[in-house]
Image 1 (cartoon, rainbow, N blue to C red):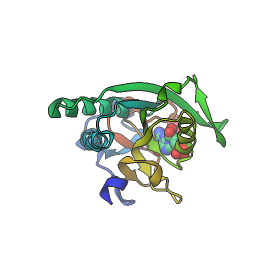
Image 2 (image 1 turned 120 degrees about the vertical axis):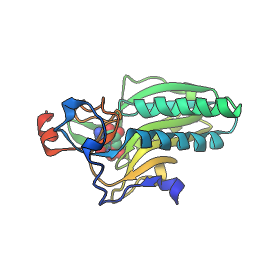
Image 3 (image 1 turned 30 degrees about the vertical axis):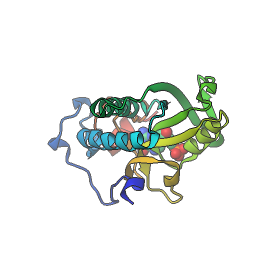
Length: 217
Ligand code: 5GP
C-alpha cells in the first residue's frame, strides 16, 4: 500500500523543467531535471515523522544517521519529530549518532560492511533504534548494517529511507518508512552526491550526461 512504498514515482516521470525552480547556477548544465522538488521532500518527511512517532510511542529514539548522504534527511526528520512533539505535547527524546559505511572496496561490491571511523555501538543495547539512510538501492548496505546493529541487542530497530529504488530484487521490506519509491536512475541533491558534487543542491535531481562527464574521476 501507499504507506509501505511511499510516494511511487513512475518510470516515465521526466521530472520538472529546470527553469521552473531555482538552483545553484554552477550546476546549470549538469542536471537534467528537478526530479523531486525540495518542498515535496520536506512535506513527505513531515509525514514520515508522524508515522515514526506513532510507532515509537513513549520510547526515546536512538537515531543512527548514515553519512554522508543521510545528513540532510536526518536533520530534517529529527526537526519534524521535535515540532510534532511540541504541537502534541508529547516530547520524545532523540539522540543522534553518526555512522559512515562502505560496502564497496576499490569499486568492487563486497559482502563485508566496512564501518569507517568505527565506533562502539554498545549504547544501543535495549534501546529503540531508528536507522536513517538517504537511499536504499540493492539493499546490500542496509542488510549488512542491520545485521551489525542487531549484535548490540537493541529493543527495536526501524529503518527510514528517503528514497528506495525500484530494482529487480527490491529491498522494500528492509525499509519501514519510505519517502519515495523511484525508478532505477542515478539521483543527486539533498546531500546525495556524485563524487562529492551536488550535495549543495536542495532538490533531488537527475544528473545530465555533461554533468557526469564533468565530475568524473
Ligand atoms: P545499496 O547497498 O543499497 O546497493 O547501496 C546503497 C548506497 O549506494 C547508498 O548509501 C548510496 O551511497 C549509494 N547510492 C545508490 N544509489 C544512488 C544514487 O542514485 N545516487 C547517489 N548519490 N548514491 C546512490
